[in-house]
Image (cartoon, rainbow, N blue to C red; front, top):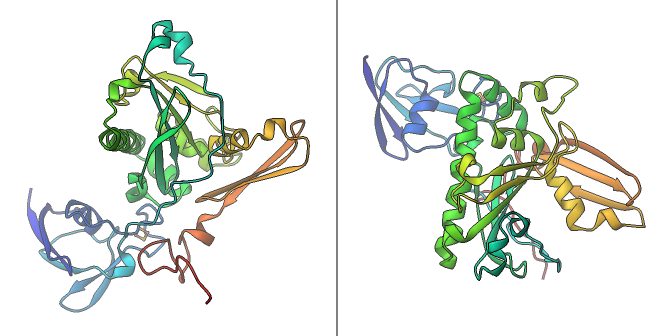
Length: 330
Ligand code: FES
């Protein structure tokens, strides 16, 4: 097959790619991540690049390569690293690892760890927890690598519904979680073989992709989840790089767009025991709220991404370099 050379500026990177590939694919091959809010279907305009000479503006996701090209990447089209919030307020909890029931021999084990993972549409955060006392030994965070396939859950669902899309997104998140676990182990000198529990929370779409459940139905009314039930899997089978005897727990979701991340928050703040009216708010790319008491709770969700994370807006942006992060009045 014929190949062409594509040069990206101002990065100065040059790659060779087969005829018919898109500029978006070429950029990915060159290690340049472009904004793909719509998942590459040509509707958001955020991946615009400029062909030189001639200053011709084209959408990187639509323009196929049929000649050698020099491509200028405007900074507003490039995806930059973001600030990720990865710390919070701890609450004293009693730790009762289920692995003790499964393998009684581990009750005497000196080193037993778990990892708590929050899979967000935009960011993924993992904490290494000492299962002896529940203390957090280290935290690691990265951007969700699925972002190259669409910024929000709707784009991600559309991508996963295409040929091979679900496999690609699933493999991306498994390898992302494994990278985070490796980082945590490296920083704390904890052996991955001493990690026996991984607990995962995320919105329903992220959970489905992590578990490789079909997601097409989440993109169409009545937006039904394939399953909202809590899932317990063997780590070895899930290819999660901890002790292969270990477990992966995915927390129960509530509905198609009310995921296990808000369930986890509700449990973390003790809403299941709340006598007074309590409001739990989780603002992510997908925003979710629960209002109620221990006896009755109501949940709702909406797309918060457009307001807070830069999707489909012409002004403002994510918490990347150049964004206002704090204001001090003296
Ligand atoms: S228009 Fe190209 S990614 Fe949206």
